[in-house]
Image (cartoon, rainbow, N blue to C red):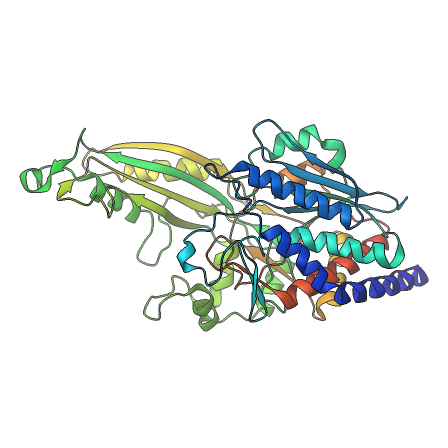
Length: 473
């Protein structure tokens, strides 16, 4: 086994050198994909997502993958499937990324055009350059490096590049049911997460879920003149703000009865990483853009813990009238979209019921409260004792030249749980290409090019490390 591993390591080293030498070529692959405005949101041209899928399929063929298909479901944006299955007796990896992207946002805030990938200060700027077309290209580049240098891979691979992750992966479960045979694998590598920083390779082992809803407050059937009616009429805007304010105390901690009761502590490996990782208040303020005079809502020592492993409440949007239509009126209604990020141990449906009950209880003056647009998606965590995680840590260390850490993710990634269920307990390795300065979903999204190169090298080594395992589970 030692000789076999040494041979695999040597082959991986050669493939990794090829990947480094051909990195400019792989970077052009990414730029080509990122020029396509494949926004999957309603209201945007779905033909661009189709064009993106076609470009991804062409890239897969060009990089040596086989059985390339564009897979569809009624009403869904297209997925791309490809494979290479010529390593008998070896594990099969399902490699995931997505080719759809967020809208550009406020184009006037971009320092370079969002749909023209631009290199600047060691980064590639453009929508989708990090989230998640870089993930797709990391997969195809590592595969190409093996095939070009050795003519084969040490493992079997299946590639799924989704086309509607950014709009909620609403059709993922029916997709996995319809194409169950295509996705079955021994482990899954999901490349749609980030690293602690651009130098520190990271495996995401916990994701927060999300409970969210729209709240509409009404007190009358039409707006009223604030001078003629103010003082006697219950203002729904004031009522809604009182309801929102009741959810947290002066320190920002939620006041909903029993909301923290089911929260689980992080696993031992994750706890160990929290002790190793150095994350200062200064770094947090620089990365978040938090103003100097604005207080932190947690102690500096708890910044990572609060973001990854504690539940939080936020108000995402609020509206009564608008800045454009502002007038001296008492609005007839007020609306807000709000939610709670839930963590392992919390039942999202229970949390949704608790939030609704609390808001209703704290609605003043007999105003009418309506709930709509409810979602309740669970958090996710995984057991990192599986041999696949040992292989991943070894591969990341070889690719980055630095030991990997376990980390949580404050956001929600809806596709992880469906894939975990479909693969019936197969290890899920969340290894990403973003860093804290990537700005996914915001203006000036970017990818650290040095980190991207190391991510491709790590993927090259991962195939060899997985191939050497007697079992990935």
